[in-house]
Amino acid sequence: MQKLTKATLTGICAQMASHSWSEEEINELVDPQLGIITGFQDLLNELEQLRKIDLGTTPPAMSVQGADRHE
Amino acid sequence: MNNNIAFQSVKSLRSMLQRGEITPVELVDTFAERIERHNPQSKAFITTTIDIAREQASQLSRGDLTGSSFAGIPYASKDLFDVQGVRTSAGSRVFHDRIAKKDAFAIAKLRAAQALSLGKTNLHEFAYGATGENEVYGTAVNAYDPTRLAGGSSSGSAAAVAFGLVPAALGTDTGGSVRAPAALNGLVGFKPTLGRIPTSGVVPYCWTLDHVGLMTRTIADCADLLSIVSGYDPSDPASVNRPVENYPEALDQDVSGLRVGIPSNFYYERADDEILEALERVKEYLVANGAKLVPVTFPDMGHSRTVSLTVQMPEALSAHSAYLQERGCLYSADFRAGLALGQCILAEHYVKAKRFIEIYRQQTNRLFDQVDLILTPATPEIAQKVGTVKVTRNGVNEAIGNAITRFTTFFNMTGHPALTMPCAMHTQGLPIALQLVGRYFDEMTVLRAAHAIERSDQFSIPLPKVDA
Image (cartoon, rainbow over all chains, first blue to last red; front, side, top):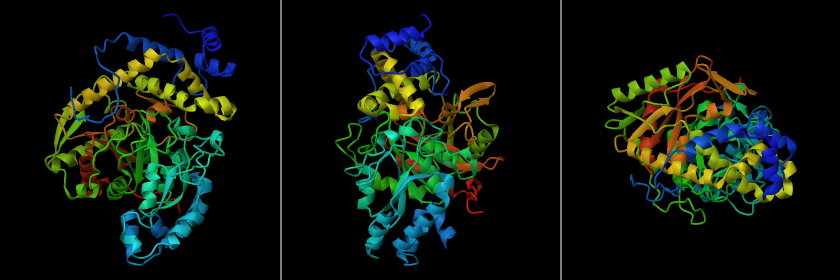
């Protein structure tokens, strides 16, 4: 996976349905300075690791109604 | 009389009311005077509703005061809860003019119980962040050391109870936002099972991880408050339709016979030594009183924060989409950056994260085949100085918000009930707290063990010296 660039994010926001983010906000995603939870590149790297883990047929989590089930 | 009342439990105040030693109006006035005196420093409240509370208090008869455990008792709620006719600011400029049309579910239940709302408490804007820093309404501070953070996002609720401005408060907890600030301020903080308390009428941050939580001085008060605000609301998709138990009944038993899980991974790693030592003393107490400690291994936690974040930010973006269009310039810079991040997460990422959460739930449920409860530290660090950005522990640098909630976040994903309570004082004069986690909808066992620990003098901590 290539390193994320500002041009990529700018292109995504311009060419897909998106809210309007300022240049500073896109800069913050590429090179975080505000102490937000994490940088986007770091998150993408983690997400790429998650993508490679096979969860079989496990569905997404929903309500805990009837959550006494174990399997 | 002022200071004697300020740090009393709800149970004690109730007895005073029922004996006629104080009236509900006098109680409101006492706390109102304290709010006026301490709010400039604590920054606990965004909005006060003293006149409304005084009017409601004046209409209560002696007979009314026996109607519920919170009749005539003042409380506060995080400024995400709708209180009819009162602004819900969410700690943001964006909602500067948002007046609630009806009560949130929990507020309506407290109103029916004739509790008296004294106002709305401060928070990290829209609950986005664990430090409680707020550029609009100021940063709520720690009652034990006002140069330190109260923690967040329910920072004002913690400060309000810890400074003796109310005896109980409501907050919300999406990654530890009730339990962590309660822990840092020497209070009880409880996030019951996902769906036990409806979130209807609470401004959402992340629908599928948000929980309503409680902050009190004592476990008994927590049990009483839980009995009032629990219930079912079909308008909340996460709400679960099952009977509300009589939680105070849980307090009659000790810990004898309980199997208490002690995690062998993650929770006893990379934490302040004094916190770990305090937890050892709790373990010794449990064993000495007939509980059995059982080692348990949690699922791999390495990705859990990423999983949580990947659910939080797209949901927050969706919740704020309309406001972003209309009032985008009124958001603070850090929250806008977080929402922008939510925009860039792919749908497949979101669904994968939700599937991981299902795995976490199944694996954590299996642990409860072996144990009745799990014991962990509440936080890996004590309250840090206002303005702290990173915490370094064992050579690892960690953003302060991540550190504050490192031991709490997981149970928002799994949805298990989790309670934090004080168990020692750090040599730096700040509270240390433990966390107890139970099976789904087994709040009774969590409260039972917590109450037993609370009754042991060795775990009590001194009150903060806010009136010195």
